[in-house]
Image (tube, rainbow, N blue to C red; front, side, top):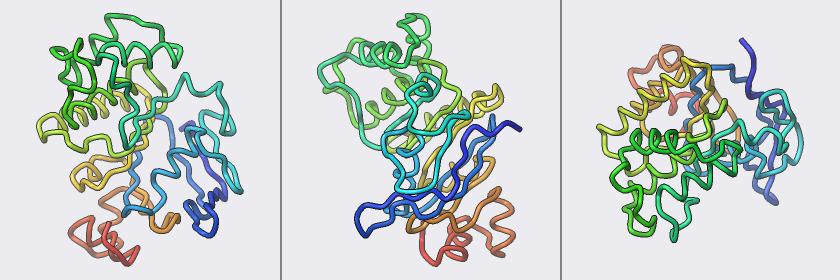
Length: 238
């Protein structure tokens, strides 16, 4: 399996705070890898290091064989932030078209219509983003991350505010993407989402304390639930 994401001794410090603390990670092509941990555990910092928005304090991170940060990789990476990066005074369709163009995907109208239908926003394509609910903005952000057909998808809490039925639809699509070779790194607090990942990394205080498929982690911890397994390995609730 080709490695799409690799980190070696990765550190990111903010003064005395260690956002990421000596992380070694390898994620293969077509894998869905879940980051599970409490707020402040380093999940978002890690994702920002992988997209090149942050520079490491020490160690290295590589994406698709290139050391990050590297602008040449960005056209092959989709990134959905934890907070909205949309432009409020543009329509939903205009936002998706803008991000498609920024990532080198052009402005293929058929593709834009496809991703808007996927996130159930086809009927709001012409609406200004500022008129959308929080959940709708989350769905529009996902469309922007998907529109240019990335090889690596970085999703930071992608289903916050999304109703359960649409969440299932999202994960069905994520699995289809992975089957086609797209690698997905997703942070989440939702346990049923974590169960859908091929592997999980339990993070706390910037460190990766346990890693593996959900069933294996539960078995190692002698636990019936992921919450209990996280408590076993990390000494805290996720």
